[in-house]
Length: 262
Image (cartoon, rainbow, N blue to C red; front, side, top):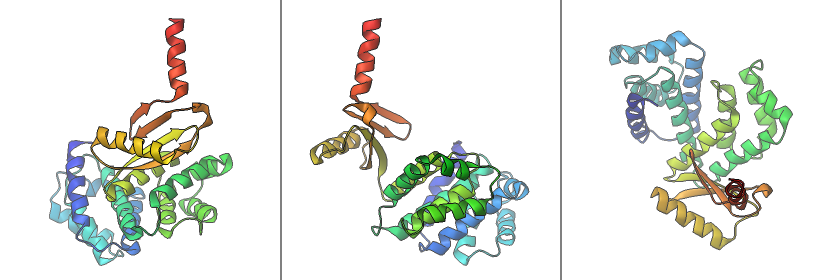
């Protein structure tokens, strides 16, 4: 992520606080992101950092005239900012849509857990994973498949996020997209996301110990997502973003074997 985009994302997230969070606003932000995916010319024009911001806002109003008033206003604020790459505007629109749905969901559902559960569900069925990742299938077909797979089993907000992601992958894998969305939802709630792989479910004391360890390392509370992995034998592997804290027995045994072999 370039410096311009990092700076603009901070402003975009701040701007979001001025708008009432609704499912309609999220849907229209997702629609705007999809619109940019479908038009490289529009994407390049709106992402031109040398262009006059007023002219860019006028172009955005014309291109997205069908969006709600709030969505058009928010898109206008985004295009007036400076981005390292035109595609970064798409990513920003998507992120804001996810953040809006996180606000709408509130405490009514475990949105982070639902997104991670959908990821596990998709990866558990090779046929479904292949169909969702297909470059030949239409966005509508993949979104319909998602609804058939998770509709009624997760919150409306979780389904909306997954439907958008599979419709507009932009070269990304479904697992990475869902993990990114889960991280965004956690961040909107003031937390980080730590995925803890363990041989068996953690006890309350073990969970508290991991929460304390992660908080101390990152100076922030984290949503702790547990994943049971029998290959670990014991201990835990903790992943926070790109960082991995590996205290699993399997890894310690492998390290010991390497030392003995050396």
